[in-house]
Length: 291
Image (cartoon, rainbow, N blue to C red; front, top):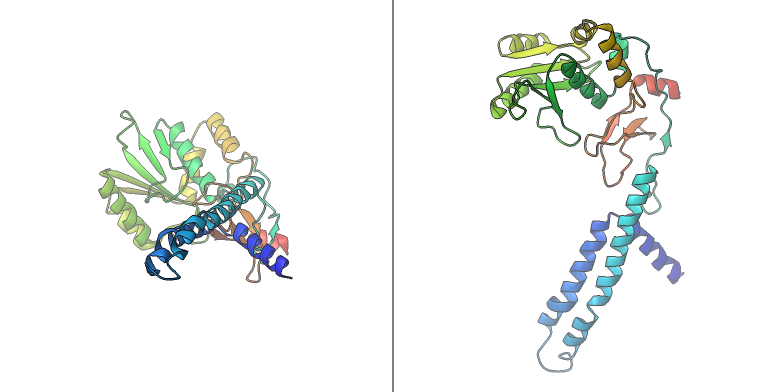
């Protein structure tokens, strides 16, 4: 019984993030090497305990350090395989395959709105490259309100910054447009462009018109794409819908998320859970297809 309990505790430590065991290793070493001996009397029967504790300090350091190493290796293997991580006896929400629409054969508003958010950003960047701009995009992480930077001559000085939102059912409000203006002022860029797959509120449209910000909704951006020569349209279509264009990208890790199910319903979760707890709501069409 005791052996099983110790084994379960060891497995629990390995299942936790490696930083937890590493912290225990450092804390136990400092405690045994310096802190506890400092509280022991300098004379008497307990005086000899201090040096013994200092000599034994390396034991928990090695033990917890080994747990940290195993935990790190475990997380790397599971992240590479894409399998969910189990924490103790509690598994994360089960993974299922979310049905994705077939790649379209031509451009339409429905096709545009089937793109996940990162693929939509990359499409916007490719569009501006097609019309003669140099572009720079952010791979992952917080973008600071900038998804694409546009350049003409000087690659170090952007002419405009682009914010993209793949919001099909949610309207872009004036708050988001004000935030873009704030980023423009901070970055000292004279022009901003906001592109959404959905629509804008009346206040957002009025604020954009009063400032050097171009607002393109889904229909307007689609019109820009359809104004390109047929060969450029085809090239953008092939690029946008290559591979998995539907499963969203984790904003923190830059990897494709997996569809998970829970008591509260289906959602997208990062494959690096529990190290990354980023989630996104599941699209209604995926939930309907699952049901």
